[in-house]
Amino acid sequence: MNRTEFIIVTAAILFVAFVLGWFAHWLVHRFTRVSSSEMGELDKLAQALHEAEEQRDQAIAYFQHREAEMTNQLAQTEAELRAAMDGLRDARHEAEELRSYIERVNQG
Image (cartoon, rainbow, N blue to C red):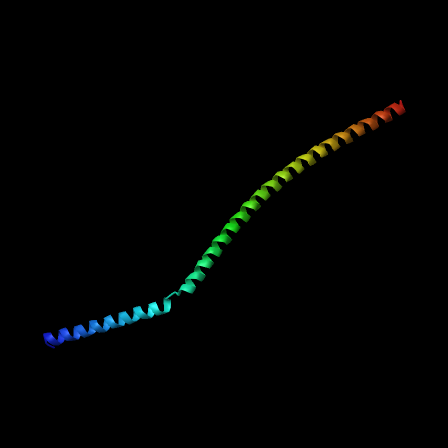
């Protein structure tokens, strides 16, 4: 193979590679092209996703606030229960003392 044939074969191979690359590029663009209606739909979906995320954040904030309120209310209720139980214990103790006093007075 002389020099001229080598150049022609190399040029032909490069040309075929160029044509195959251009064809592959055209196929990729043909199948991945996004129309304006699809872009509008994608924009709507993005907006809907953004609104859903905002609603989720608001719901999380509401539930955290509500949980804090309920925890506070539970703590208050437990404190009231402890106070009531202490009062009941004191009243039972006092009633027992009065019973024993009455029994001693009645016997003596």
